[in-house]
Picture (cartoon, rainbow, N blue to C red):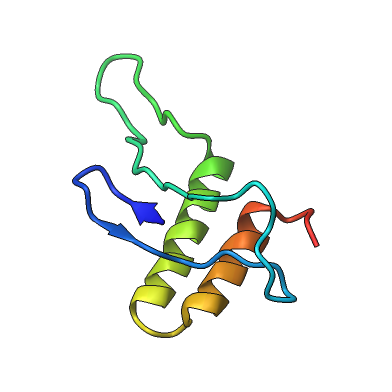
Length: 87
């Protein structure tokens, strides 16, 4: 289940390449996090590598929302992106 702070949610299936559900995953919640602050010593709160990974996650979700990926493809892409060492 992908949920945002205003209560909207969307269900996405996260599965292994063989179509089975990984153990110990029930819900996946993505939160938008502020990445900058304004002030004399402010700078990015999110390291560049983390911001890049967040952008990749957003890209996969956008491909799903626009119909480029179906729910199983999007789930597989998210799983491989979020858990790159799992098979």
